[in-house]
Image (cartoon, rainbow, N blue to C red; front, top):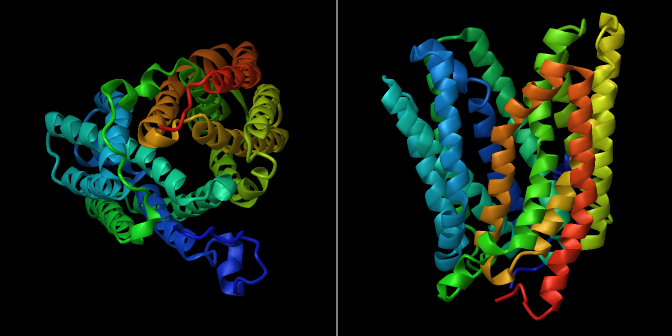
Amino acid sequence: MTTSPPRTHSTAAPAATRFAGLLPAGPLLLRLSLLTLLNAFGRGLFFPVSVLYFTRVVGLGATPVGVGLTVAGLFGIAAGVPAGRASDRWGRRPVLTGLWVACGVVLAAYTVVGSYAAFLATAIGYAALSQASMGVRNALYADVLPAGTRVEGRAHLRMVTNVGMGLGGAFGALALQVDSRAGYTALILADAVAFAVSGMLVHRLPDGATARPVADAPHGNRLRAVRDLPYLAVTCLNAVLALQYGLLDVGLPLWIVQHTQAPRWSAAVIMILNCALVALLQVRATRGVEDLPGAVRAMRHSGLLLALACAVFACTAGLSPLWGLVVLLVGAVVQVSAEVLSAAGGWTVGYGLADAGAQGVYQGVFHSGQAAATMAAPALVTATAIDHGAAGWAVLGVLFVAAGLGVGPAVRRARRDAWRGEPRAA
């Protein structure tokens, strides 16, 4: 058995390892932090240059690239459940290692793409492998992090992810400035190496750090998550709250440019502020969210805060450049407060309502819901806030409030099912 990792604020940790909470003293959480940091750094490198690489270097049109990435996203959503089932049967460590190494291979193939067909094939392969790995990774966390510290451990790893993505994004910005094929290619290959090395680090986790493969069960039990209606309801409500990421990535930049007088660089400032505040607040936001009642409260408050953020953003139309920037930053602070609460609550309900004997499938389903929200968010935010202004922001606010309030009844229904003799542990 793996010993419980110490709290990240332990006074026994050396000062260097306590810096920003990035390197905890616990050896297992330290290993997880290092591989998470490396993987996130690689993804941060590729994220800001991916579309421009295909349009400016490969020479594909922006619309065909957008359509191709949307199609690839559909394959990514579909890949979560089979990957989760594979990890339940053969173990998290070998499956996650294989997925991340394969991600590296497909990313390397991007550098030789010369046609739309090749782009579409590699984009589908990368999306399927990358999205599938997320659910398996989450199931791995469920195995190795003790239940009492699991949510705090996830918060710590999310903080590390934000730091890694931010550092990677900074180097990606340099490639954007250089704007050359060599620069883009170097970043893509660096991300490929990061994936492969991360996979090797997973493979080298201690033998006791991953759960043993689950013995074969009847087919109905293997795929229980896809017919567990209460769990699916919670997954959908969590996905609605996850639309906030599309609001931040797509909605705000378009809103700033089309509807406000705020400087265009406001969007970049808001993204930097978001990364910094998540890194500072995510661990603290998990306190009191370690059980299902706490998670329900956190997600309910998140929905209300998101509605407030929508109202604040709507108020920026027509303001002077300075006041527009100030109010946007206020809205961003409200949004990140909602973000850290919804993340902590989502981890707790995602793990707490899952069948402990089929965490791979359950986490695959839960992450697929978030992936679907990520794919749908740009179109939804554009059709509401961008096209209809304050009225559109109001629609989004009502949607967030309804999702936050709906989590409580959905969780109670799921718990009643478990109490009626349908245990969630195999």
